[in-house]
Length: 104
Image 1 (tube, rainbow, N blue to C red):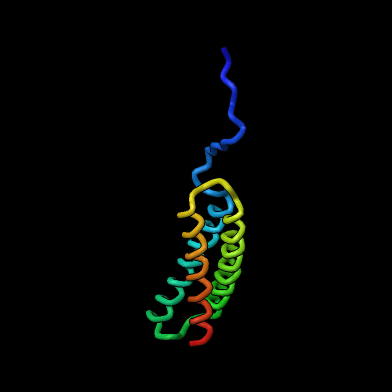
Image 2 (image 1 turned 90 degrees about the vertical axis):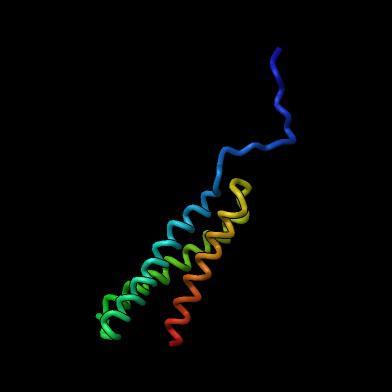
């Protein structure tokens, strides 16, 4: 006798939402670039080359992209809430750090 599937349940094999993974892929390297730029600026006592400015611009683009994908991940039914919140938090930290660097 064949078992019938119940239509009221949805089981997902996805552990994390795809948008949350993409957000983390953009957010974590952006954070690493920001930390590297700050440490390098401290080591050379503020005499940084123009390439560091380009690195921070790329980090800003990656952080904004991570934030957009983190917002999209909340609409996805797959994955847990921890990965979605983590990707949103890391992208907000990236953007806040870059805004703080711009102000200072």
